[in-house]
Length: 288
Ligand SMILES: Cc1cc2nc3c(=O)[nH]c(=O)nc-3n(C[C@H](O)[C@H](O)[C@H](O)COP(=O)(O)OP(=O)(O)OC[C@H]3O[C@@H](n4cnc5c(N)ncnc54)[C@H](O)[C@@H]3O)c2cc1C
Image (tube, rainbow, N blue to C red; front, side):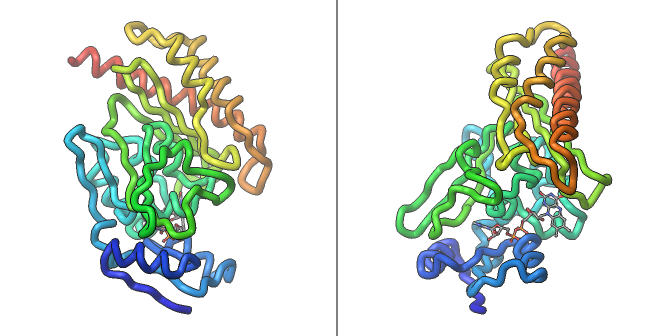
């Protein structure tokens, strides 16, 4: 097996263009597991760890955060928790401290597992994925267009993920995940919510309950039309929101849970997270 170790982003793109079958490796918490189980034995690994550009994040003048694909979960939690609470909450639920030290959002996106925890908050918050190739340069891909199928994303064979872009939270954000135990667990299903009070709208993301992570569009549209941002949260609105999130899912029965359980759990998580977010929103409004 060839082991390619580019030292710069330009060299990494050139190496990928040279050998499109080379498998990128960042934290290795997915790639190495697959190799250990002999599920995948690539002819070449492209180690992105020496590429310093991937391990940094920066803030644009409008506040939007550009987070390098190689920034590990621990740093997202400690350095960006205040500005990206949804992504940070999801990061806290990934694996164990060891996995969070090595694992990255870039790797979660690269793997594109429907059960990956970061997809739901990226969708709810309106993330854009920055991909790049030596031949065609940068491509900005809305998270809604990134996932194509089970463990399949829209990257071209010569492209690498450079970063994800996400505006800082405009309002309360929550991530909720159901597992068969409290830690070190792949999601049975997950849900994320982001409130945008200035725009009077709510973003959503569903994980592990369809072939790809997805938004619950009808539920978002319902809240945009029905939520009274100056009043208490109406029980009937919350209930309908939960129903619409449940209807947005198309889960399967598998070893982790049944389709029916996933639908039910999603409606519960949707109602709970809306309640938590609304409580924060109203108390922040009172304090202002
Ligand atoms: C014990 C254990 C527990 C886990 N628990 C969870 C969990 O709770 N939640 C969860 O979501 N995941 C979990 N995972 C899976 C894994 O940790 C995450 O998916 C993590 O985000 C992968 O990041 P990584 O940097 O290690 O990726 P890697 O393993 O390095 O790569 C993963 C995939 O992304 C590709 N890739 C990496 N970087 C790039 C790039 N820059 N451009 C293009 N492609 C790229 C790789 O080729 C590969 O296909 C767990 C794994 C283990 C072993």
